[in-house]
Length: 427
Image (cartoon, rainbow, N blue to C red; front, side, top):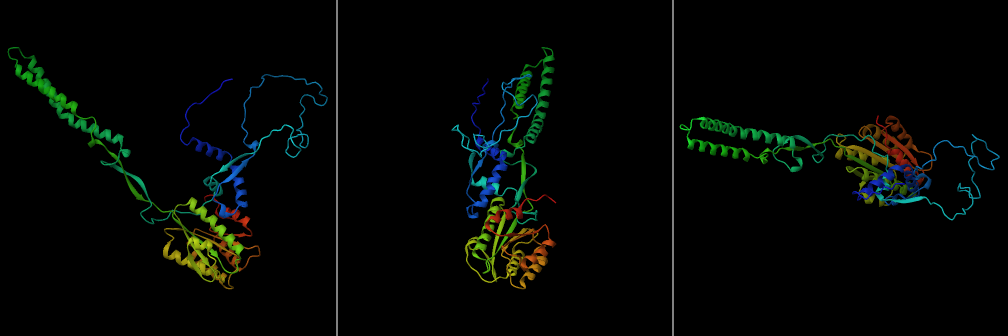
């Protein structure tokens, strides 16, 4: 048997790479455990890690062994039941240590537990939001000069060493050496020819002083040739980069929550948990998504994050006040040509008698033509009311950009959230 021992030092981040490979390999098991963890824990407790167990049988590795080789015939004594070619029945579970896990205790005193390990907060949230995205996110026109991308813009004489263009620099150096050496080589050639002509003369006619001068001139010219540098700072050329403005994919998410008296504290808690999950998703996956929080009863008001989640203000119900406020904010601050607009609304479906029709008209006439996506979650265990029926008209008009779901209890939040924001195939 041969043993191979790797004594090389571990590379940088080797453990992190190996861990990522492990997570990719057992993604199905881990994702199932994460979904179970999300369903049993509160959304406010979403930002901590999770302990995950994988059955030992699912992490077993294939093993190569040396077989006996060749064809063999074996006769086992006491065989009264089987002949050659028969298939052996699989042993059943049950008592006597059968091994299915349903029978009695083992008499071996040893066993194998499930493989357990802990997911970090970042890894846990990666699995929670895996496969989710903002639907219909588009590249918009230039919003400002902050979003730029460096692009190549020719060659420059000035730059940093990291951007040096070696080929162009060597080409410039070669051209400079040719230009500087050409007159020197010509003068050197003329001096050498004059020296040869002088030395070919008869000894009586030969001028020793002239020969000495020519030799000194040749030596001086050869030193000048050697003094021409191979490359000079004048030859250096650099790749020139300029910042080119890019189309913006910035987005804004409007979080609209009903805080009227018909919303019980349980309904409000479910709505807050839904928006908290949405907030975590946006903050984690999109750096340039602005959040606008709108609370409403009979009147709507734009609030900050703290007041949106923790204020106890209440009142009657006029849903159109919130939609009107969203429409005003879009008009004043977020032109659709520059922003991707999203709205997420949570309500119990209760509304003022004639206001549901106003909500429908406001969506069809003003908001939906400008929005990328509108999600509506109705938090109620009862039958749908007039607002749901009017929203069904909007959903029929915009089937891919308007989504509505019902939430009955806290356990429905995560499945509904994944359905609303799941990654869809490109049209």
